[in-house]
Image (cartoon, rainbow, N blue to C red; front, side, top):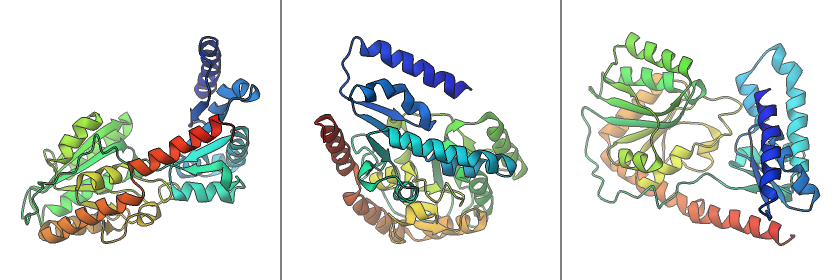
Amino acid sequence: LLSIQFTLAAFARLLALSRKNRYALIQVHNMPDYLVFAGVLHRLMGRPLVLDLHDLSVERFQSKWSGNKSAILLPIVKLTEKFCCWMANAVITTSQGFKDRLLGRGIPEDKITLVLNTADPNIFEYQADREFLPIERGARLLYHGTVAERFGLLTAIEAVAHLQKTVPGSQLNIYGKYDPSFRQALEARIDELGLKGLVILHGMKSLEEINGIIHQTDIGIVPYLSDEFMNLALSTKTFEYAATGLPTVASRVNSLTGLFDDECICYAVPGDAKSLAERIAWLCGHPERRQSQAVKARAALSEIGYSVMIGRYLNLMKRLMEGG
């Protein structure tokens, strides 16, 4: 109900603003997909309308809901997505997996532009003076971004407990926006495992602040769970770690392995705390591998980096505004 109210409010606000500004193009970000209706009058007046699908509602719905509710509502979610894509002149999406799913659901390929959420090098600076030494204790680990169950933070916390046996004193810092109930679950697990002071829950930080934190970190972790949605969703933080030269341990999910091979990232079994701890410990003991990963992950960005994606996005905007 709130999302419908917001869509109506956005429609009215956009209409009011349009009386003062002649917009050449309207871009709408989901969720929800039907927010695209805020620009329907502009579409009818011949202004290009772009739907930016940062997440796919169908897979997100399947990941979040199950049982009778999913069975009843899923066809409606699918139909809504298809109709909203039809309404738009162009669709942007953020992972190859998302694009493949849209193609499989009948969205024409020439309507879809893939724009990955790569790291801005003006913010995430490569750390050329990073030292790669054996880490026998006190490894500094980092997770930043969305803090929700599907991102595997409970697995990460359990991995820190296992890691104390091989790399004692290792500390995980988590930065992000928390769902209050899930934060309570994280705090409870930290207490149960006796990890107070070793797993620290911080709040949101600016991207510039995160860049500074990365430069004080030994290993970044991306502990995603494996499900219908997370195997398609692409981790923005992985690009940021690669851009700064931070070695990374990540869950082996399809969205990442399609871009970064095993020479770029040290992969662990999704949802397996022991596997995650073992891969972190292995990297701690192999500084030469951490260094080679950092170099190769950064090199992998050359074909999918910020300048490439900016060019792709701007070319799309230019073509649409020129009537192409």
